[in-house]
Amino acid sequence: MLSRFVRLACLLLVAGIVSCEAKTATPTPRTRLEPAIRTAAPQAEPVAVVIYSQPPKPTGGLLPTSWRDPEGSEFDRAVWENFGFGQEKTIHEVRWRGGYDPARGGSGGPVHEFTVDIYQSIPAGSEPDLSLAPLVHYRVGGNAEETPAEVLGGVQTYTYRFALPVPFQAAAATTYWVQIQAFQSGDPDWGLVVGSGTLGDGRHFRGTADGYFYQLILEDAAIEFAALATDGEAPVPEIAASLADIQAMLANLPPAEEIPVNADGVQEVMLVVSRSGYTPLHFAVKAGVPVRLTFRQLGYVPGGNELFVRWGERKETYLILSSPQDKKTLEFTPEEPGEFRFSCPHDWYEGVMTVRE
Image (cartoon, rainbow, N blue to C red; front, side, top):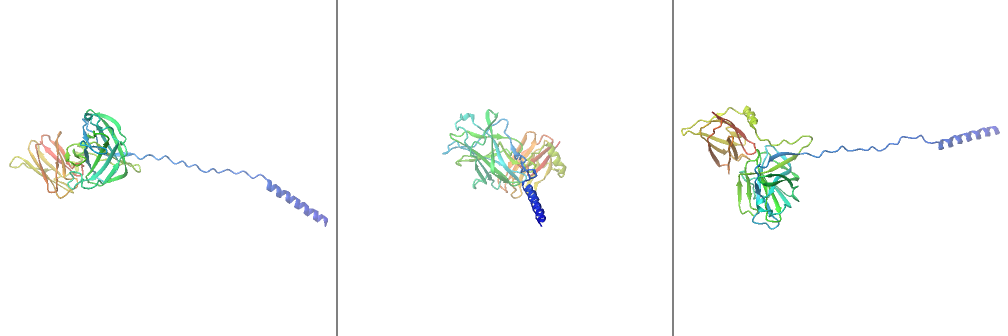
């Protein structure tokens, strides 16, 4: 009996020893899992791509568009420059070139503010509709990053830029007018540089700040618009036609309509623009024989009321219709054989005049 108790006590003792060893044993080390450090790939800044450009004219010149802040003065002026696109575009940034009139001797002082406005056009397309509020109106809140650029025509020019707080959606085949006006403390002397290039239509609208007069002037302003590249694709800029473009056009145009010489020795052409384009789209005249071209539109044609005509290396002009019922006649004598493109200012409608020997 005793032996049984002894054996049981020994078993309990051994069990206790094992249990204590189990409790005091050093745990097997485990690998510590550190939280993963996730470094986001650097995001590339959106790239602004120019989609419309009227660069400065090499000979310079200024279009006054500034206001004496806050009370105004007799030197206050305002300029509106028209623009448009063949396809719908989104404008993210407005850029321009300007300078101070050296003849004014710094009378205005530095620009401390700009306003940027975009207006719709009157139905005829020939001027901004100032009877309505602008489609967008912004105060830049400074001098628009005024940065010295080259000297043109004896004037130190500067570049300026303003990112629109809300991108502007420009509809296709629609004429808009942008107004950029500087604010100065003295009698204003700032203006936009005269522009040049292939996209401008050679005119702007101007007036005094108090509305004393308004005029359509045949010079462009140096402006640019930029859009952001998205998903790796850059916006397609508006591109003017070159001689190669004209040859490509001819491949898709109908044969030239031959314009006869009438009893008065004149080649008479009636050129009509509709929303479908020009009629005739392609016509031919003889060099050295006078041409009388009459231009009219078939109803209201957005952007089509202006016709840019060229008939020589340095021979070109604009015809502007003031209403759907208006018509304009141009008389000229082509001397240079070749292919000459005619179009609306923003290339929404285009055709070709062939001048034969």
